[in-house]
Length: 245
Image (cartoon, rainbow, N blue to C red; front, top):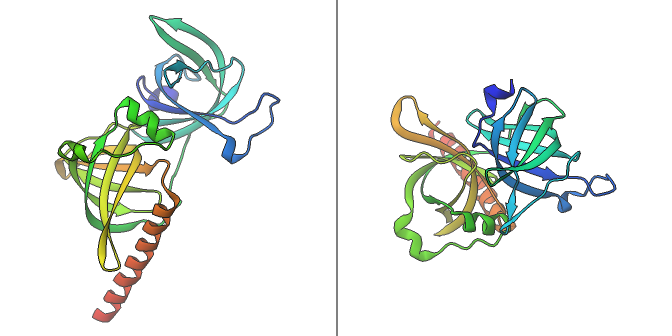
């Protein structure tokens, strides 16, 4: 049921995938908006805050259908929804959306994951930084080093990572994270932005949170380097294990 999964305040990504003539766009032309759920009205209708981009409210057209992805405590859920109405309430611009398909859980396992133990430092981005990151223009500030929190990467892939820390991350938020990988004879730092998919306290380790993130607007070269590192490290570990036998 919708109300069992979706709650007010949760982040939702809205994907516009149709042109004015109704034809599907190519992958490179797709447009994403990030906003939040305002309220759940029924089991097939909900209110969503109109997205804001560069300080301007995006007026989602009535009767248009969108692909929506919700970041919930139970994971990522996706559905198609049609805009029924839009209005302003207490200075908040709202649209009413009606589900046009069932709500389905999404799995994001496109990349092989390598178990590891790497030090990572991170912090949540503010609104201006999030807008820059969404457009691919975020640059880390070296002076922010004292603001970074500590964590340990538990597994890594070319698409994201899972790390442990003493801090709960906000699901759906963007975070800046930095870690180092051993490349040939020296460590190379990576400065990345990721969206929090899940943040959950560990049952057997109270006060420790498992955070899963997916990289956002990742540099292609950096992704390829990380994937190469993962396969080389896996091969090294297999070779080391076979020598022990």
